Length: 475
Image (tube, rainbow, N blue to C red; front, top):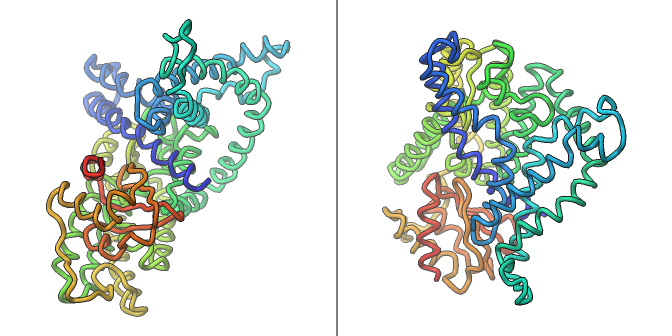
């Protein structure tokens, strides 16, 4: 179950990767016409509407993207199945269709069906569609129906399967929707405190890759919060909408950079240069893009207590930003790119104060991390006990990295499956005892083993290139 949920989290990154395009288009449009939002400029109107075409269709992007991302060979037929499945489900469960099927008045229909076009349904459809593709894409029918064999069969099966799925959801969805609304309402009713709790939980779920599910409740229109969508659409309240995003900027752009500096400061003298080069790359990544995994995984399992402090500080940062109504938003993550793009939007409120807050948090991270690391002699990067005669130089190319990893993972015969998410290699191996974890840690940001045959290697944003090379070498 854990492995399956991780696959969903990885697949979600396929459609999420499209969101920065929407942020760029809408951000430029808002800058051109900050008051009229397209009313005073045709160019601004085109850019804003083009970006909104992505933001407003997140559910169907999830259905198509996850169906594709979870398919075994990443084929377009799986994506088509996701599209077909989503259209069948949302049509059958639209308020008008439900009223007709159940023979009741439209005004008596549960409000849940008015929200059936949502990311939760998109995710569900994507998972079902990919499962059908993986199971039936190789099926060969009788000669009379051979045209519909293989991949062509999958969208047809998906359309048929979604009919009973829609029937089940007709009774289940109102209950699920009510639970999501209750959870979201309970947190949102707590105002800034609730935002802080969300920020804390967001970081705690990073190790298992399930923070995307939590984010969906607050960022998208599942429980009526839709913080991300409302912020970019300008349909929220200035100083409030965006509070589930704003507090991440001080952490991702500044706080974790302070942590990186602390790791360099506390590294053993002989390791300082190596740690400095790694942390400079990881620190720049989190500052510029908001992708934090390369840096977080560098200490998450080496010093879990330190990571807990990181989660607490994140919660405090989100709470402070929400309390002070300092607002900026993001479409991908809380890095410099999204900060610049969102600062010119109508609902951004004193975004410059997030920089001030960030500089303070950078100092807090640095001094707290240095104090805790030295006090408890934590084995953070550069402080591990290693044999001096071991090779410690890191590969300089994607091919060299893949070649080294292939050896340290036990060779070609030990690899069963090779895949990747935004920053990690996700691998299945025959024998985990053959995996040389300490050597892998020397050339990457970290390695973890969430299951008996599962291995994840934290490579960074360039993981796709390393994954492609590893697949090529493993053929």
